[in-house]
Amino acid sequence: MSAALRPAPLPDTAALLDVRDVSKRFTPPTPIGDRIAALLGAAPRPATVHAVDRVSFTLPRGEVLGLVGESGCGKSTLGRMIAGIYEPSSGDVLFDGTPVMRGGRKRTARVQMIHQDPFASLDPRMKVAETVAEGPIAHRLVPRAGADAYVAEILTRVGLDPALRQRFPHQFSGGQRQRVAIARALAMRPDLLVLDEPVASLDVSVQAGVLNLFLDLRRDSSLTGVFISHDLGVVRHVSDRVAIMYLGRIVETAPTATLYAAPAHPYTRALLDSVPRLGQGRGIFRPIQGELPSPLAPPPGCHFHPRCPHAGPRCRAEVPALLPVTPGGSAACHLHHGGVGRSEPA
Ligand code: SF4
Image 1 (spheres, rainbow, N blue to C red):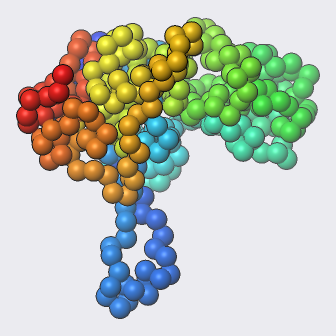
Image 2 (cartoon, protein in one colour):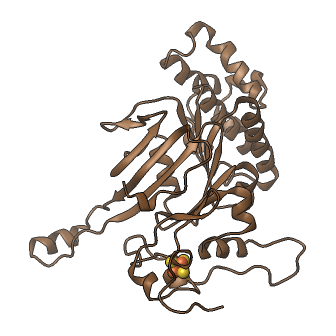
Image 3 (tube, rainbow, N blue to C red):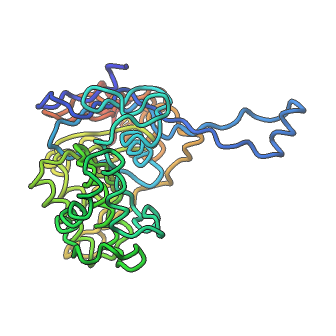
């Protein structure tokens, strides 16, 4: 593992989750025309998407890490590797000291994932009672004879009326379906929850209820969590620590209060500046300049350099390492580590 890419050590070194130099690459299927051209010796090599590029961090038991970035930055792919849905192309995801996946198979039920769209993640043909009980019965966490009472207890815990357990997913509202999805995950008695945009598909009016449920669960059961979101406002309320991703890399990580009060990376600053703030008049909304580059052809050096107001020659040539900049905080930016190669604009 590259020591340069590892963030500053966290205060509590008893990491429940240890993500070590993890990458995930996808190679899209080659179109038929390109394959014919390849036979004629004329096709370019198949493109590879570096969805996640050498990411490392640790997460102590009982903490929640907010994972933030624009759509396509790799945060969901990273979440799926942590949850044992994708196997890393290289590197290791260790949960409680052992790999989450080995040989293409998930090795622990103690890590559970909650997806953005509960309707898509729930089997429409299964009643809620069956959906919630299926995993615990299969993993012998609860005997079949006791499953009904167990389901009723879990549904109560997530704020659903246990009397509804014989209904199907389509008979619930969006917010209720997400509670069912949370109940299904909790029924496995997880130590680590990965939540991938858990409220993004819900009406604003029900988002607060689901977020409050998560905060209650955290308080009552000391859950450890990775909370993935593009919404900095949501992440601020649920996370102890935040990691900012850009084109497959973590560019900044810090305790939540530090990151929001004094962002160290220009991309984090741009993200925070782009959030409209109510009651502060017009002109506060400043969209980030430029388009997110294609992950098929990311810019060399610092991926953010085409959009960065501080970019210098060094930024275009050299990948900045994620290095400590504040107590507990790290940033991958040459501004903090030797400069960008010329005098920077004020
Ligand atoms: Fe901007 Fe250079 Fe820092 Fe990248 S390394 S964020 S381009 S100043």
